[in-house]
Image (cartoon, rainbow, N blue to C red; front, side, top):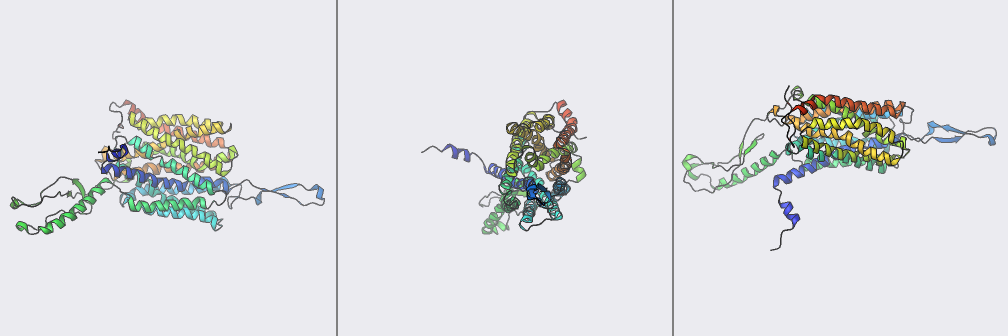
Length: 528
């Protein structure tokens, strides 16, 4: 007999649960990649909405030999209403409208998401997000120049996009335990940077010829992913067990019909009840005492015990979980820095390096490449040391001087700029990625919850919602401060990193004093 190929042997080494776990990992990765893919175009299109392309007109005079060129900035090729001198403030207002709506909606999203089927909730959010993303691009197609139209679309899109994060984190938290959560979440959270990179490339491809397609194409993609979500997403491993229980019950029903009336017994089979939880997979004989000695075929029957579902946690109850407040406030400042880069980096590169919108967008993807490495590194280190807060603090400590170096190095050529983009991306996005994934999942399954896994969505929404307040404020401040010079923006970013570090000091000290930390296991935070 021929030997089994190594590849087939590797594939058959996984059981069914492992395959479904890998499938859920990949699917949720792609789903949230499409969310960030649809957010990125606005940062690429900014330099096209306001372009430095004023025409030089010749002023008529009595003597043709004395004609002099006269600048007419009002005749430039910018897209109204972003052709004004306060265009930075207008672009900042668009960012703020999206992010402010996102921050407010996030607090509600987790609470709503706990009470609705995640698959349906996420599907509706993705379809409507695709609609509003396309609607922004249609502003170019139908020559819309109303600031109110673009603000409305941004607000609506910000609200519906809040369905994404609590849903996918809850899903991935349901499928993966704490053992190597940092590494797994670090790898999984790279969807943020992958989405930003793909969004930059797609938007950059169309930005110069038809910037409307920079939004329409990502909008179609996220809507298509919403359909895939509806068809294939499995929210929890118990969903598979319940489906198996239903199939088993149906099979047993057919079997018992053939044995109906044996020894006076009616059909004896287990029926699935909505809300029931699969508690045991043992084989049990469902015949009474008087039937002993009766020969009947023995079938495996799944015993499904109906239990009351744990009640959804309240907002204040989630805040009382140890560590939620500190990590939420830390994320506020960490996300402020990350989203300022997300929305303003391409424009900064355009102005500082004198590149066109496409090249600046392509170069900005290096920041996201660094973010992928930083997120994975943060996850691995926090798993190895068992110290989530300490890992974040070290990266935040290194990020502040690196930001200052980036503001200087970007003036000295392409090579140093590339290097600093990669380093900054890793140090800025590392803590952000760790807090929004592994830390959120740890706190959402904290021992004080006594196994109530339904709290994960609310905890995730509180942490990311607080972070989204910073995400809304950062780009707005960048739009205001950049009018005084880009140095002011970088000072603001360094200050935010320092404040994020300060907010973690209490948890860092607790981790360092703890005698219970073990490699690969995050330190549990005591209730206070």
